[in-house]
Amino acid sequence: AKTQGLWHDPENEVEYSEYLELDLSTVVPSISGPKRPQDRIELSDAKSQFAKDIHNYAAPGEEGKSVDVSTADGRNFELANGAVAIASITSCTNTSNPSVMMAAGLLARNARKRGLNSKPWVKTSIAPGSKVVTEYYNKAGLIEDLEALNFYIVGYGCTTCIGNSGPLDPEISNSIQDNDLSVTAVLSGNRNFEGRISPDVKMNYLASPPLVIAYALAGTMDFDFENQPLGKDSDGVDVYLADLWPSPEEVESVIADSISTDMFDSEYGRIFDGDERWQQLDTPEGKVFEWDDESTYVRKPTFFGGMGLKPEAVKDIKGARVLAKLGDSVTTDHISPAGSFKADTPAGKYLVEHGVERKDFNSYGSRRGNHEVMIRGTFANIRLQNQLLDGVQGGFTRDFSQEGGPQTTIYDASVNYQAAGTPLVVLGGKEYGSGSSRDWAAKGTKLLGVEAVITESFERIHRSNLIGMGVLPLQFPAGESADSLGLDGTETFTIEGVTELNEGKTPATVKVTAEKEDGTKVEFDAVVRIDTPGEADYYRNGGILQYVLRQLAEA
Image 1: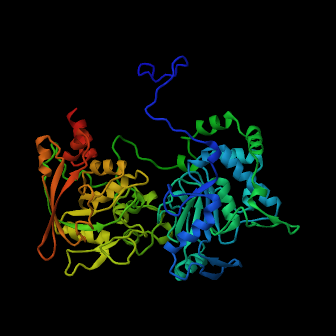
Image 2: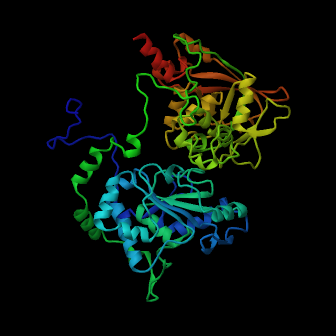
Image 3: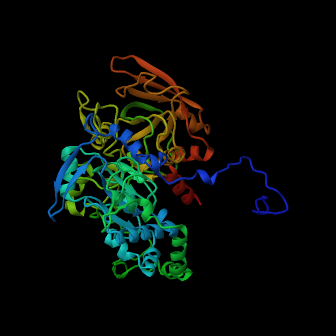
């Protein structure tokens, strides 16, 4: 840092290329939703914004729709659009901040003192990223207060934020599905993309840990915390959020009394020891991993099948069909397998065929070591909108390898295309691949047989990951899109000029020809988004994994 001139020197004023100023007086409590982290909403505007957003989810005239629900344990309530079905303090992000975690605990304590509780339809949980949180909650005496509001610690690590909330009560889930209700989830994670949190939940919101508690008390997103009471106390007095919110001094005082460096030293000092069950696992010995052909969790992947010491020449793409035509802001959560899945999905059918019961499916994330499960979950997000089909959501497409191009699952269509030797392309809009930098969004794309993705623009990391898996990222000419070029996804694609990479050069553009069913052709020059010499090397090798293995073999 000193050599680069980046070490702070109080004698010399630093010159920056850009200056950003933040007026702290303008910072106000906010949430984000209902489907992207960047969709920030000031808390004071949350109710009115929900009233606007619900029109995108509920049928016209049914924005205020509700149904009566009775559960097996005797709860009876009305479940409406906007109801908070899941409220979870989760993720490694917010739970690493003692200030907001203590604020949540103190808000729960204050709510308990006033006789308030979470609504009976809200599934609540706490999943800290560290056991230190449990330790300082115990020392502060806040565990009992949180549990009084049904916020129990369920584990440590990825849970609700990645779709591992577990199922809702069957009566609640059935009421949502049977009546097409648009219920919500509120969590303190950092991702809220469509279909990510729960298959029963359409609208997902990110909030601070204390606001997660607050929304569990409110029970709905259709709520104005400034002007609506959360309930009444034992004296019949209205209780507002402002009455429960702990002061900064109160939070700091509890932190000072309850958190010490020793807690972190103790917990992290034994983090790799594991519990008794971990220590009793029967592990094989030796330097080579022992693949188990019967495992449904970890299977030998096919990435290196037929790989030689030298890479084969790059070829142009000919006779490709469109696996999916997608719109703007398709995230890696739309592409990558995430969360839970049902028995009638391709992944569910695979597990059932291999003797796994529905209750033991677990999640895509837990089975990420089995490519057979993950490929079946790629592009299988329940909110995916493939424009090859009208009004159909989920992992479906048209299979042009069959007469008439019938509707089928994206996975089943890819199997047929690969059997016929037909390469595939994906058409997208702006910001393709935004969101989390999921490796399986690129891995699954490759395993489905996709050789190129043509979009208006890419998210930086996903574009790089596609190259790392040997998938060619291309962009439409500036100002053009699939729609402006008249492409509907039924065309057959040829991409010429890719072979220039064999000469050690990266072409700026390649010629794309899309032939329609009537024989007419649409031609355009697509921008090649291989941006660096290193990326060109990865692509020539079929991907970064093959590149690294060949480098090691030659070393």
